[in-house]
Image 1 (cartoon, rainbow, N blue to C red):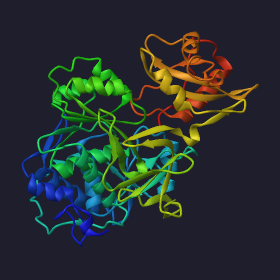
Image 2 (image 1 turned 180 degrees about the horizontal axis):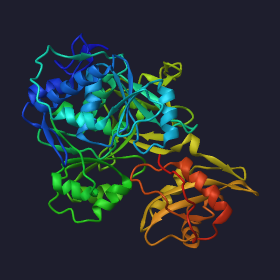
Image 3 (image 1 turned 90 degrees about the horizontal axis):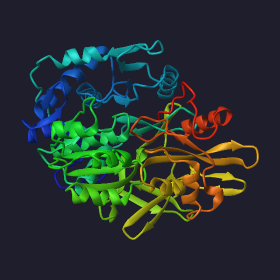
Length: 489
């Protein structure tokens, strides 16, 4: 890393500056984090991170220890993540809803015995209960006015899980540099300032949640942890100015009365977005940005404004290879996957990371056409699910849809679809519409009701499994759902 690569005064030859420590000086009395239960200024957050960091050291956590954190978004989680980074341990936040078997596989993958959560696992020798962190947050200890803190641009600093085809997630390893550069580039494109309030609407076990934290630390903006109420209620209650959401959440938001909303900027990711929604939001004074990103690039890579004009963000590079695959590199690129005790970074001969996303880059517009590994063959014909989903999602009343292959004795695989719509979409209505748009072999043969309740991206793998179960005992557009199917991604 060359210090001259970054804005003047922000990086020295010593490494990447600690954003929280710097914010505690520059924005001392500004609110850093707010939740239903507590709020902290940047100065107070710095003190709490010091307290919890010392507590973790007293418990025996050492430099480079990998530490699993199984907590929902909370002040405790924000402080825990930053405190582990401060003592140079390696936090790995995971979904608290992971079943025991998956937790154990992740623990084995990370080769760790440290676990922070609300319930002890038998497989973890070193357990810290979240209640002890809450208790430590109540302590008042004088702030250590230490010398400036810097992080190495190459040392592992955090691990974020990303989807794996085997059922066990991959463990993407990051240094502080990748989070820092991600925030620099994002804030350069979407204004975020002191006094703004950014809703932590994405879980911190996803890279998008961590990215929100770093963008706020960099800008001196406030991290707002939502309560259990719906999105609109949180926006109104906390006077949110910035939020991240998926297409479906934006659609639901715009169905409600947004007159006089405090919301100024919305980042929409997680897949395709309807341009009409962005235009509608703009008419209400809400600037919407449609972004393409991935875990391995520390969140955003290419972002469009509400007019559809986009750009590759600073500190990233993006290109399309001869096979139509999106390839990326840059200073936000992760260190690699943690496997077998080492970190493996899969790059081609020219240093590009292959995303497995298919796309077209035309001028200032990036069109993501699908995933290489989502494509399937039905009766000898290639079907790209995202093409069909885009057409279905344009129908009135449709929130979202996912096309998956289902085993078929004649064609090997056939397309079926899960649709979230009111009123429900019938097979006949779907066929009448799609027959004028695409070849008949791409038209889903069966429509199943939406069985996924989580707001984030659904699991295609889980829906494929559900489709094969339905094949045995589901006919037409009525029936019961098979129990105990975990469709969480």
